[in-house]
Length: 171
Length: 171
DNA sequence: TATTGTTATACTCTATAACTATA
DNA sequence: TATAGTTATAGAGTATAACAATA
Image (cartoon, rainbow over all chains, first blue to last red; front, side, top):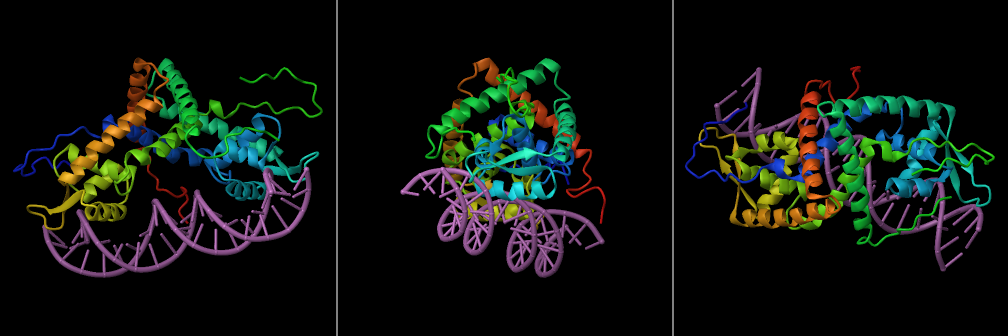
């Protein structure tokens, strides 16, 4: 099925640059590979990688509202409602009322949520090690650093040309 | 970075590691940013970035069948049928019969397809330059190189452990 | 009137199976 | 029987609008 090497060559082969030269193609391949490996690492967390991101974000700082989490994760607030519903049903997070603003609900981790976060984090660290296994430690560190820098600068550039709320306001 | 020096709160702040430390999060952010910038660069190509990938792959080597292109791009052959349908309607590609196997259809670029490929490629080069604008040329080159290496090694590792998209326990 | 969260609806994308025509 | 391509259908995921409660 493979290696169709003897094709009739009545026409000149185009011989254009292949997909390897495309930055978007490399990003797509690496991201796809990660999305294939991540689900087994975050098994048990509703919403897969997105649910894990909620656990990380909700545990990283002071109590955050659903809207703040949605904006930080770049998803819609309606999707956040569905996601928190599932995670609350699974017993990983709880909705807590805001002390003064009764519209707001803070998302906090339960004990089970904290355990799921630790387990998923360890499993994801293993996945990362496998993905970067062919790189020297210094190269892996530099790849992480470069990706973070590109993410920051690109998001800043994109936010300047997209008509939407760019405010950052927590709780 | 974080400033966890304040311990005078009624509740202990979780103060766990944030999303910045996650490789998957960085990949997601960069990929998302690219997917937001790419559509304007490949405007006019049906299927967006995927249609552009077909143009690149079909022009890079000898005539390829729909199935070969689908496997190279990692998409289903049915999706490839829909995609080639749209691109053929748009006049960018043509289906040509295989010289000996009458089941196979080769996907070849038309003149309009070649023009669309060139225009999209130039626009995407500009997008790449904007995304990597904050990086030194050597850093940008290294990021590309590292991504290609990770993509290759990870795909090789993933292809060795294909237990299917569902869980390991077949119901 | 604006904002937070929720609910309902519609749309897009993809996965799966079944069908044809060839080999 | 197996393969390349096509077609049809169902499901997941997402976007949009409308709503209720509160500021």
